[in-house]
Length: 412
Ligand SMILES: *Cc1c(COP(=O)(O)O)cnc(C)c1O
Image 1 (tube, helix red, strand yellow):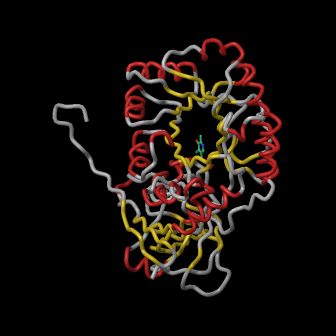
Image 2 (tube, protein in one colour; image 1 turned 180 degrees about the horizontal axis):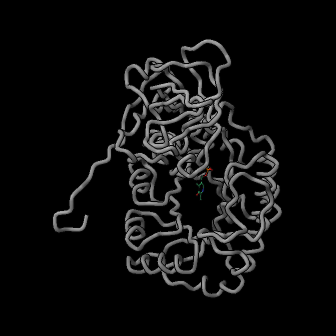
Image 3 (cartoon, helix red, strand yellow; image 1 turned 45 degrees about the horizontal axis):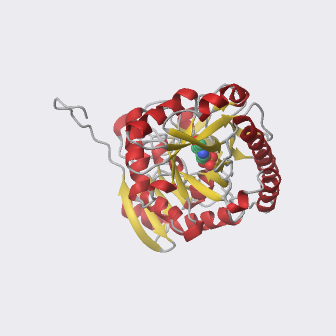
């Protein structure tokens, strides 16, 4: 039995429940929304739980590749069975030590963010007698869509400013230990609708074609990014992208006529779309408190448990669903966590029925940016249990442990 009440009784709260059937459905839906030839990277940072990684990898030809940005994520995806050649290593602060680890363990494709980053990848590869395939990540001077989280067109630690590439082309083509494989774009997250997503992809593909000309290397690989939206901690369904497949094929036909034959291979990326709706956060009301004219519902889950976004100062419109209270309307309340900081709020002015201590609440669509995006260690509470189910079947129950390791005269 895998209902929230039973799982909460058996494993306690706060806890997350992830349903692998829903992960598989999201993976299949997203692949179906893309042309057959387009590959898909799963950004492990959205949720690196081993069972979810395995589910996303499986699916045969329509299984995801992995996008990672640390040795911890490298461990996780290798453990989940991703082969080295299926991995893309990204990030603005790749050190020589982590690059050595990645190259030694079979990763060959790297996204590079600056001339210095590219040179470091090259030096590391050279020392190992290898050549690294490098994507030039592009911070485009302009974009097409109005989105929630825009990442290009402004100064950034991410990507080469597109306007600098003409002057850098000769230097970039010639970095020992590297081979320019193509470009990487990630202009936006969480596009507001399919039309803006398509507009952004069209813009990206046209810009990529121009840059291929500028850089003077035929691209073997083109990662055009993502932006696939998903409801996050509020009720709702994953969007359906009915027009995307044809629109992408059309833009690629126009700008990269060889793409269907793999010249270049084309990939998209996603985190939240693939895992957000698989997850539910279970939390128990610890206390209800009225202060002046405001109500606080104090939960056992705070930004230590579900803090990905509120930890960054963005309080989300979290919706909670009580499991026992009847009655639709209550008093608008702040949802506070148990931590000793006024910043421990999961929501403000959340309207829920009058709830009582001991009551179980659930937060829907909480499968992305959960425990590992939270302030897990702040105030020393245990990490939430993570319960994995497949429909009615219980698959695994685990908890991240943090322990202090002492150095005894050696580097850790
Ligand atoms: C975070 C990230 C993603 C995943 O973003 P979502 O909005 O969760 O899909 C994909 N690519 C890159 C480069 C990222 O940094």
